[in-house]
Image 1 (cartoon, rainbow, N blue to C red):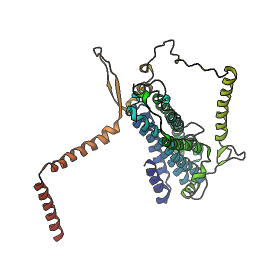
Image 2 (tube, helix red, strand yellow):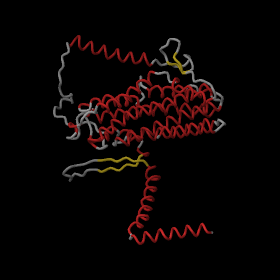
Image 3 (cartoon, one colour):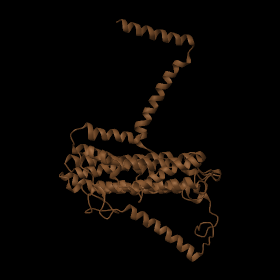
Image 4 (tube, rainbow, N blue to C red):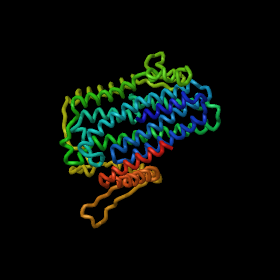
Length: 414
């Protein structure tokens, strides 16, 4: 559904609007930057799985707006190869986001069966749901923008697009856009921080609820569906980004190719030639696999496969429990302190006289209170008014129908 809205905006900006206006691209870029910062900051402090992933999607939609804004500005000034590069980053991120977010949501639905949606009621699930845990890890890494997965490639292409902004003839743009690029890098870093929290609190550590050890792993068909999404994240990280979107990009920017191509060596991904930065996804993947293989061989060679299981070391304290491990609230505390003016927080603090002390902090955004709460209250009020009509007798309902029919006939006769 989110990608459908992006499709509509792309059709409006690159198809229905015949003129390319740089200020329209600048507006999209500004809105996208604000949206990405808003989404990633609120995602970092969430304690609800569904809300965390929803705010993460807001952040990704903001990145798409930024890429579209750059493409429109480049196109307005006739820099069509650069426009095609930015648009390629946008379309590739649409595909990547669809895969890695679906991969993370599959985990959410599975884990929610055992502990609702609260991160505070989860933990240690990778022991009981290993298939779900390891496949979700690939989606989480892609969402964090780490190589060699699809999320990294699309964000890397977006940052590469910013390298061409000094060629824009508008002085104010060349002065402000480097600041935007730095903020986009901040968004990417906070996204990684959020995904570490998401995976670590759910799957690592000890179970926080007694019913979690009874959790069951995904079934055969569930594993297959989850594996398709995870493999898609890997495939998008290894493909040439221009391959799936060439025709769309060519049509949108007027026949100029993005030229995001494999260089002459056949290993490097270089946007618009090797004069700019290049990235070798296959080389990176082979390096990771070689590192794992080397570590495995060294352990087998020098330790002869000996394995000793023991509790994790906790500074010498041997009686560690799930209450002592980091929580979602504690993980997000630094972000809450830094960006406190942006949040609407409510704290339930314990008192010295409580037999069972309880602390809880609830974080919401001001837009929810300003925009959505009044609409919800109005809808509830109207629903109550309409509901009064349902508390009559059958004769009253027949009277309503007769009066409505009579009014309709009088209107037609006139």
